[in-house]
Image (cartoon, rainbow, N blue to C red):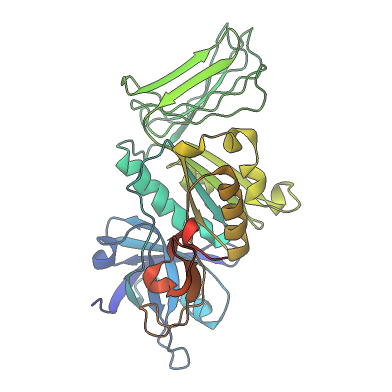
Length: 357
């Protein structure tokens, strides 16, 4: 039985309008937490007895990172806490993402505050692949006589921020963002005149397990990878606030928001792009977190494309530990029979095929 802990706040800062990032020093939770789990945070006000469930955004050694929005009295109370204040916390709670499977492509789809817990997920996936990176981002625009405008973006600790630019001749508009074991965290995106707007994420290394072959004479690409590609599909209502952190852990990051020129800012607009919708379903998996309408839209998209999904479901939670039955949702078994389950215990992450919409 988990116990409520009084933990010290390291920082608690507003990162964009009405969205805060709180860092709590809590080794017990940090050492046990898995991506997709949550914690209960308690106020010291008698008028707010019930805890507030918050998804774990990230783990940094002994620190638990939480991202929350100002939506009521409880979160407004938390926003007023200062470094060295203490807060009562219970966790980690619930069941998170099942990361045992290792498909070739993992789509991390997040909307709104649902972006926050995907950072912990992306970081864990990167660590599991043995290709973690905390390096600064380096951009290189390279001279290639067979590849006009070739662009290489990589992460490197040896030469951060280096840029080289020159001209080539034959392959207009090709862009390459590469990932190698010598330069971890890099992304590969190819766009050639023969295959416009096509983007491919990959790992490139000297290992025989990974191959990235680009035919520069005609712009065709052959991609054979056994390591997983981590592709983030992120939707924001207005301000973009977690892209830099996600880019450090993912092989490709695609973002949409109402402020980016999209009238709707829907992640399905990104999923429908050729480079995503053409991914082989048997080698792809979706991990998704966000508001329920977005989860349903992503589920419908994944189901139509034959791609399995794991969805972090939203619900109002009273206790967070399975006592109050306030967070039940309709699920279904393999035979199609429906039943009700408590998200705080069975979830919050649930297989898309188990949800009775």
